[in-house]
Image (cartoon, rainbow, N blue to C red):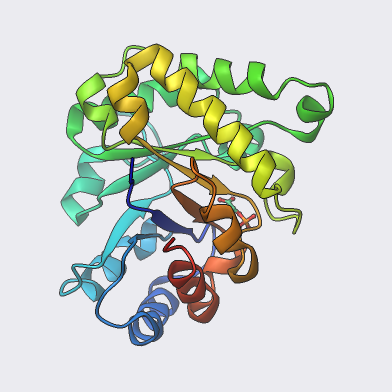
Length: 254
Ligand code: PGA
């Protein structure tokens, strides 16, 4: 089963509009006119319009937001609706990132509400899952992933799952420089695919793309991507520099 790799840059709270556009100019030159992988940039909300404009002639690069609210509108100070993101032309929305879970108290129920609203609106979710170091040390990886998948993907539309992306990001590997070994990543990805198969059936589990995230760098990309169930990467720190992010994209073709 061949799945096209999807490489996403999660810029977190970095790069305002001017810096984001500068990145795109440099990155475009480095990557050239074609790529064998899907490339997605996830800037901050305020940089989304500038990024979309800078990519107006790009068939290569898609745009993600790092979060959304699940309601269409209302008294939710500081929040952004999916309709607003669609107006800008956002293709994907990252939900359930471990920083949202840990710092902003998001739980599987909320993530599920966002996933449902994204599916209803026709925007593709990138749903993040992953265990903490304590959970890994306590041999809870499978229990945690199973819970996050069962609750986060509850009652989602099977048809829309084909275009949904799952990002396995072990929390202990995010921003720490400590990458999961290719074997650890493969094991968690294979388990994730198995659970998705239990929920949605074999057809979807064979086609859904599962990204790895956590200290992905140019030097460790190829080995991670060569694992049979690793279908891309969600990249934080190393995506901030056009040089290293373009290397990661190039090293992702297996
Ligand atoms: P990192 O972040 O690549 O800096 O570890 C990954 C992520 O948080 O998505």
